[in-house]
Each structure stands twice: as C-alpha cells, then as structure tokens.
Picture (cartoon, rainbow, N blue to C red):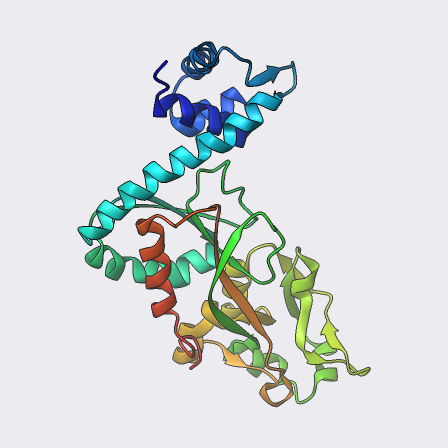
Length: 300
C-alpha cells in the first residue's frame, strides 16, 4: 500500500483549511493535484475519508480516525527534522511573522538585523496589518498580539507588556494649553480609535472614579496614524509605550497628566497554532524577541 507523507500532508491540510482549493494554495500546489492525491490515498485505504458536498467537506468516521494517526506521523517526522537541526544549532527554513503595523514598524523591524546576524539560515517573511489575521489561512507561523487574547484555539507565550500614556506634542500644548486635571480634557482635541472601542478607554479616572471613556474629535483605526497626528500637533492621544518610546525620548511627544495616569499595561503575546514541540525557527525568534523586550525596554 505504501502511503506517502505527501498524501498525509495533503489530507491533513484539506481538513485544516476546509477545502481542496485552500489546501492547494497553502501547499503551493494545483487544485487538481491535491484532488488526485486525496483520491490515491482513499484508494490505498479502500475507504472514503471525506464526504464532498457542494459547500464543504466533511470527515467520515473513518476519516476522523485516520486523521489523528496522520497528524501524529506528520508531527513525529517534523519533530525529528527539528531535532537534527537543533543538534547543528542552526535553525533553518522559512518563518512567516505577522503583527499589527505599529508593532511591526517600531518593535520588530529595528531588531531584525540582530536576529538575522544570529540566525542567518532562517528566511523571514514579515506581514503587517491593522486587524486580526487568521494564522492558518495566511500560512503564518507566529503572530504578535497586543492586548487580551480572544482566540482560544491559539497557543500563546507572553513576550512582555507596554504601558499606556496620554501624550501630545509640545506645539499642541503650547497652542491649546496643558491640562492640569482630567476634567480639562473635555476642552481639548482628543485623538482616538475607530475600533475597537475599548482602546478609547484611557488610563485616567473620570468624575465618577471610573476609567475615562473618550469620544474622539479625530479618529483612526491605526495607532501609527494617531501617532503621526499627535506629532503633527492635532491633539492629545493615548498610545502604548512601544509605539512612542523614541518620540518621548526625543521630546517630540510629552506625557500629559502623568500624576493622574494609572499604571495600565497592554500585554504582548506571541501566538501560534501548534500541539507539539515548536519548530526551532519559531522558538528562536520568540526567544529573541523576549530577550529584546525585557521589562523597562520602552520606558524612558
């Protein structure tokens, strides 16, 4: 019978992605090639693994049983390959990394040179976005998420934290005045997010003693856009330290209401899909970022 690893990988990927078309894209093969591979596998096993309908694929009972064994075989082979690479102390292969644009620009990109020097055989692909990426659909190995995690299907490793502060440019404060108390913010131009709405909850207390929820006078979905607006003197903004450390150090942005600001920190996590030992190329990148983002890194 001699089932091949290629057939096992095609079968598992079709199940993971939900369609032959998506699996073909994920594996960089043709749709007809994946379909033929599945056909050969079912012929060798003399059973139907997937029921094909016009809308989706469904595992048969035999398919579900075989899938668990196929995954175990694929994981064992990959783990053995990674162990050999680890013995050579040279992580190798393509590593796809995803992060929100501000985190990619201000945290990851400045540290890529050091990582590539230390791990020259890892081929990096960097993707940035403003929303939550489906790691499987985008073939992403590891993503960095800021704030609370909502996807329970992901594994996560804490990388660090980053404090939130109210900030404005010296030019804006000179023109509009510096707030002395939280109530003074009502008279100012406030820069906030279009979504998620939770980002418009600022780390200061309102008159009722609750965290202040603002209505932005000028809003954007991008933290980087809000940073640029603040630098241009358009108002007061609340941003995370990882995004503004260089600006604060240079004096281009200064903290507003420092004594009234609560110590609120956003969590930073590396997330990934994985049920077994992480590939060494993923582990080394996460380890490198954890070391690079030691406590106090962004606090100036």
